[in-house]
Amino acid sequence: MLNRRTLIAAGVGATLALPAIRTARAQTALRFTLDWALQGNHGMWALAQDRGLFQREQLSVRMDRGFGSGDALVKVGSGAYDIGFADFSGAVKFNAENPNSRLVMLYPVFDRTAAAIVTMKGRGIEKPQDVAGKSLGAPEGEGSRLLFPAFARVANIDTSRIRWTSMAANLRDTMLRTGQVDAVTGFLFTVHFNLVGLGIAEDQILSWPYAENGLDLYGSGVFVRADWLERNGEVAARFIKASIDGLKLLLNDVPGGMAALKRREALFDEALEARRFAMTRDRSIITPNSRANGMGYLDMARARELVSVNAQALGVANPPAAESMFTDRYLPPKSERMF
Picture (cartoon, rainbow, N blue to C red):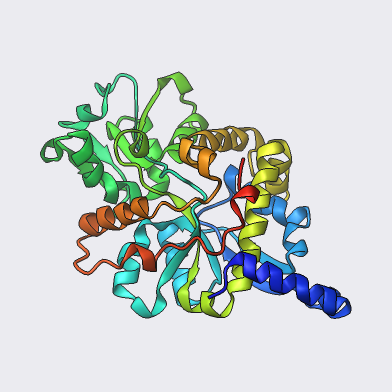
């Protein structure tokens, strides 16, 4: 399989030899699903569309909102979408159960998972270990809840004393606010700003991200089906290039990114989502690892840990090899991925 440098070199040669054909080539249509309703970090792709980065890469991208990471994994795995963005933890179980629809992570946008415990002051929880003896809430099957046993092991939390309450995803934060549960698990930037939207002062919110407290796993990223990738390697490389350049635009023009999302969703709260993106940027995207090695840097040891932790949490007896689930060969050179 060709790497991006080889593809670029081949493309340059073709450009010099056949400029007219290169200019006239039709754009490749792609179906791209997000993980959830539009949020601040999705501005990287809105800007890539609006400012011509996809067009520059000869791509015509249809970007649709998602309904959860699990849903996005299934949509790409089924072939309904070409490319997805989601928390990749669930792909361990998916790939084990669907080897003919294997999913591959091309670009971990979140160098650190956003999974966290979140509570409010006055609930008797001052550190992660204090959730023992308390009620902890999350939807069944929610990624942060599935990862909680692994986090509990590294954080020395007594899980035998925790009372779990299940609820629909749209009720989780309200139930925390009203005291029906003492704490919840979820993505840090999702729960935090949902509570802000419910009128909770930020200084009343307490949180402990798993990645900052002993369970440093990759989070959400861009992924595709392996068989699609074999046929469309150059297309995948161009999409990743446009995505990384879109993130650079967003980092330098957050208001512009929020305005681009507002054009797609009239009810989008630009001020709130700019703050949500700032938290995402500082806690999950720009990390010591990504600052040193560039956006999307793949550390296979961390990838193996993600597979191992999820296999244990989900009871996967035959987990796939991390090398079959992660690749960095479609990333642009390091010099193009630095912040």
